Length: 407
Picture 1 (cartoon, rainbow, N blue to C red):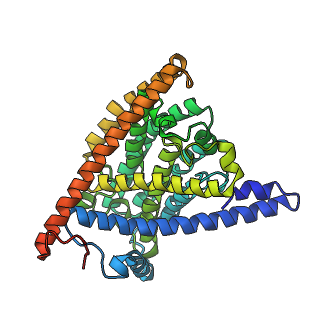
Picture 2: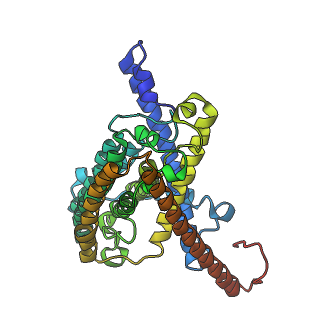
Picture 3: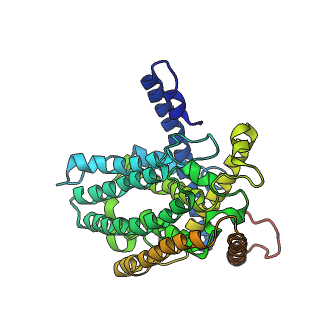
């Protein structure tokens, strides 16, 4: 998928028609990618959750349960689509599609590599922040129109949560805009270097803080644990989607899993160098197709690594209370986001990008980040080893037999 909208718009023959064809084609490709990713993400999340809880997880449909998400989707699609008594039929039907539109629309400005983007907007990052706001509108409508107190509570929680956490997320991204001088996602990637110490996350301690502010805020905006209060199964049955069934119920969770790619990809674009290839210039990447494919692999590897971390967080941390969630945003994240913005502006003046001080700080921050990653990997591997031993003890398998195969 090249920059289809721009390409078709630049032709001389019926430009409006060709632009429409390009937009439809790009939307179809993105829908296929989002569908495949959401299904596989649901499977991987359930397997990771099972491993962390010393359980088996889905293992019946397909090899090692790989096609379980297809079976679940077909089952829910064939179920009866019910409307609760007293609901608002129009808004009740519309809500899940607004959530879906906000999710899918954000894919349009996400660059998978050089050239490989649906629409290279000059305000791409601003567009992503704006279009994802449709998600909260759909959740609020779904909760309010259901004529259910549990759904209404979930919708109100979502309104407070997402509107609040959009502030620190936008401020964290503003640090990246200051560093790059652009709102285009491709330009933000081009402003970073191919080597890790030239990524924006390691530009200064303030950019490092901004990355974690964005990551926490993105978890809250995506209703991911420990911020899944709009769903809160232990309190609100299922929150805003309690009264939904059949296909519309699928749409809500389809959007949630597909949003894992969006939140992780935005972090990769803004802080982790995007598709930049080490020791290869931006111009050379655009000039050769094999570098474009290499950029796809690099971008996907970084994004999937963040997706794995987000899934790990969900099955590690307990859910926060509502007051704790709001306190974290307004008392901690927003003040630190202001600190990150003013610190970034000051650092840009005191330590130029090519100065000795700037380079030294970037390398030092990179070594700090490398040590942090090594610690996370070490703890994760140790945890999984304990889970494997516990599972083998439960099932009577040998503790020393190397292959680990679930039944």
